[in-house]
Length: 246
Image (tube, rainbow, N blue to C red):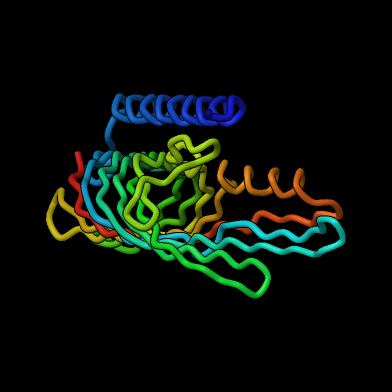
């Protein structure tokens, strides 16, 4: 059964992103109503599409503990890599992104001196809101730092070709959804009056997902002298897209 606190977390997180998107939208509208000083200042908004690659280099869980005098240890690593497509809506200082991602990796479980592996695959829907501050290099090129958040909602997940199961053998997709905090930089290169190429590189750190939290709770309840730690999830995303200024 889905953890009520996790459901509340995801609901509140989605509300935050929706409110942020509404604020971004109001900025779009406010800027659109302002008088234009010249042709370049008129191009404060854009929309575009593109593709990206990326993944999570970390994440997982590790714990040690004792049970009837015997010592036990467990480490779970679940890295993944993949790619997908996205659409973006952009103003001078904000970028709203909707993406679809597919990828996978090899999960490794180590218990004492015994290790096992299984293949994982994922399909995610993500919503991101980034703040940016552009610097104009010339009429064709601008660069900008980026900082923001992203919500990854796992739509489907498989382990060794079978549906990934979460706690109590329930569907595990909600167990793997999470928030990311991301930073990086990008550039826009205009190769036509209103059409430009966008490149972005972002690095991020994520909140531990419910699957990792459940593993830690289970270990704490099952062993005494337990020492547990959720491993930090972090990863790189590289994007390239084409946008239209209006």
